[in-house]
Amino acid sequence: MKPNAERSPSPAGTIDLSFVVIGYNEAGTLKACLDSVRNADLDGLSWELIYVDGGSIDTSMDIAREAGVDRLLGGETRRRAAENRNLGLEAATGRLVQFLDGDMALFPDWPRAAAEFLYGHEDVAAVCGNLEESSPGILFEALQIDWMPREGAIRHCGGAAMYFRAALQEAGGFPTDVAYGEEPLLCWRLRNAHDRKIYQMNRGMAHHNLGFRGLRDYWRRNVRCGQTYAEIASRCWRTPDPLWKRECIMNAAWAFAMLGGVLALVVGNAWVRIAVMTAAGFVLVRKFVQTRLKGHSARVALVYALHTYFSKLSIAWGELRWFSRQIRRKVTGQ
Image (cartoon, rainbow, N blue to C red; front, side, top):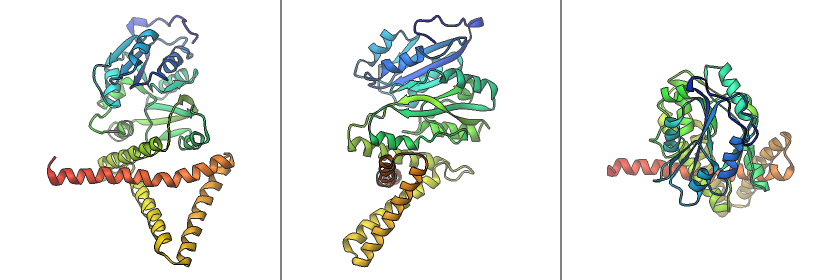
């Protein structure tokens, strides 16, 4: 759809598609996000644009107001992402709802393709596409590899996806009793309690801006990822579909193995050190070769191999922090 083009009429007051953008201190990226919705190919679709602010202390609310969103919600207090999405869901009137974070920008052809897919697959509750990292640099090229392009049914999607509004409402919206990981837990409920599918289309959905300012941001993101793995896995641990149980165990196993290897390098004899270095080299070279065979450059493949295993330490630390906090709460009753 071209900027400033008129929207398609809404028969009998119905809306085809509600865009719900959530943000917290997104002044640097929010305008591009909202503009990407208005500039999308939406001819023939009736739609609305809702922005929900999570208590920003920057100019995010002013930017949304100037952009002329249909509904401007929140801003009065700090809220988690799940609460913001649910607030947007309550205000949405579309049969479909596209959620988007304020640090993303839609591909122009995504909304129409996703809407047509959902209208043709009523057994699917949500559909997502591929994310492309917009931050420049080799680290971000490597991190994007984890956002694997694929086509088919998946276990869960992230913060950007298009849903049938009725399916979301039937599932009770995004769970607010978890610190993070509300989207995977919602998808788990949709698949297991409501017999609905989650699908990924192998086409571009949105640009994403990780915006790391250094190693500290990278470490904190991975720690939060570990906490999320642990919390969601604990909810699903003893079910027929134990989401992230295996990932939790493998992250911890790799972290212990790496720490054990460091200890062996410090206190072991020459043969032990050679064995440890050989094993580490084999693991890294194997991941490097696998990544190269997927078409990535040698530099990106090397960074991705290092990231894959270095991140296990911070992820496992996040898992440990979460489980230790739960044990402490049980002991102290707090």
